[in-house]
Image 1 (cartoon, rainbow, N blue to C red):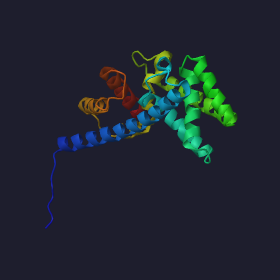
Image 2 (image 1 turned 90 degrees about the vertical axis):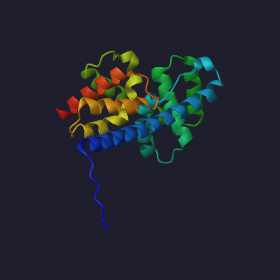
Image 3 (image 1 turned 45 degrees about the vertical axis):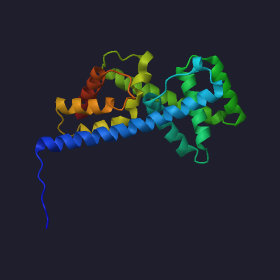
Image 4 (image 1 turned 180 degrees about the horizontal axis):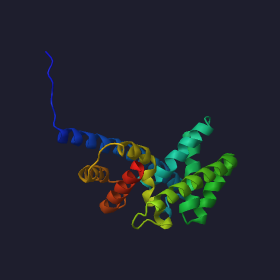
Length: 208
């Protein structure tokens, strides 16, 4: 015997929003794991020097995750440890003011004969970072500056999904719900008001 279960439009929207939130959360968690991997590399290289550590998370993974994917495709024989070392070197080069750390990472890269691959990693990281900055700057986001671009980088892998949901009908309440779910994962450092502003402006941009 078949049973048809009817749900209201508001229930359908709630289910959809929670599904979107879970998908976004899954991406954020994967990005955070990339950040933790880079953190462990720095701990190993610096010998536990706490002064040399940064709090890596979803934002680091948001930027370096796509670079890592690029490296895996370009260098299929390269292992995870080597890729992680290259990503750590790129982060140290662009966002970490520690010549001592950079020198040690470069020594490890040289020991493994990965100088050419490191140059490619730096180039790809710079390209992605500049493209993302220009895009975000065009949105005129409050408090967004070149000095804090890393704090917003968690958005990079989310952009295709935000573009997809912008094709539907989203209310401010829907956006608020998605923002609340995203923040509940505890890996985003920007405020709820800033995240909401970003979501609204991104959806408007993608809607054209």
